[in-house]
Amino acid sequence: MLKIYDDKSKILRERCEPVSLPLSKDDEKTLWSMLDYLKKSQDEKYAEKHHIRSGVGLAAPQIGLKKRMYVIYYTKTGKNGKEEVVSYALVNPKIVSNSAKLCALRGGEGCLSVKEDKEGYVYRYYKIVLKAFDLVQNKDITITAYGYDAIVLQHELDHLEGILYYDRINKQNPLEIKPNSELI
Ligand code: CO
Image (cartoon, rainbow, N blue to C red; front, side, top):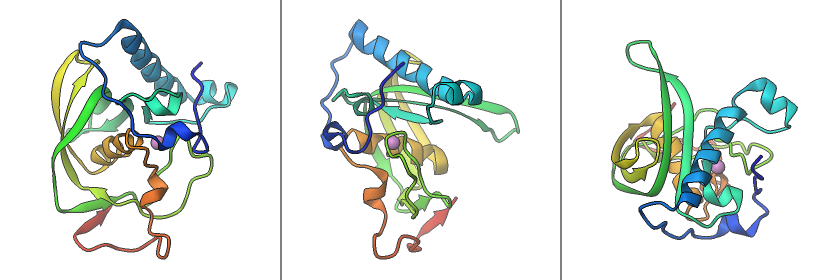
């Protein structure tokens, strides 16, 4: 079982280092175990038994590693009404373009490293294009993501810079409505 570091840990405030490619066996093993952790965290019975919270993303610093890599796992309903799995194990991710339009989750964000959810809108780019090496597909990929998908990718990317989601909440006006933005 992975140990999850909380937001009092110094490592969550540090900038992570690039990971060398091709991946070492150790880094591969770490990424697969992170992905496995996320999947299990979404199993209600498992989560309850092991006293862990459910998450859709996990970044290396959250398990104590100062490395530019993170995993994402969740299911969503696709355009055709079919269940789709979103699963990535990304290394050295980089946003190469973004929309001017912003978006935020109506219910706010959460994080496995932040014990109590903090209220407030976390504005992020509505659309991003991100490049990375993905271990799930075992190749370099370019992801074009919108809305929720883009938010999750950006939340995890922030972890690699030592940024936590509540840093982005407007302290004076947590529910501020920004121009050119959409709540989702
Ligand atoms: Co987080």
